[in-house]
Image (cartoon, rainbow, N blue to C red; front, side):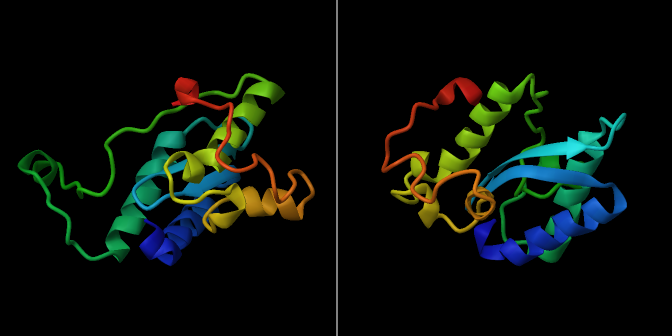
Length: 149
């Protein structure tokens, strides 16, 4: 995904125009992404938005992945998992833990030593806004674990 970051950003932009939502936190990894969204009051249709993001992004990238028959029958590409994990944030602490998990993900997966070194993350916006320090989470030591996955 990171090698086609502009296409992914454009997919998100288009869906946000048609069906408004806020991206509270995001990290885009080479093969997956994590994000927290806030939808408008009374709107709970995450599925539509994910379907449209996946579709818009898929239309913009070349078809080089292996596609199995089960996906071909459903006209699916092989670049997305079929489902997504949805979790309703319970409170401020839950929100903080999920944002921390998202921002720490590139370190967890070994792509960088410091959170600030990963360019495809809302972490940099949190730093610009003064919410987190640029040296947040130190080097490779994090209390967040697989309990959020």
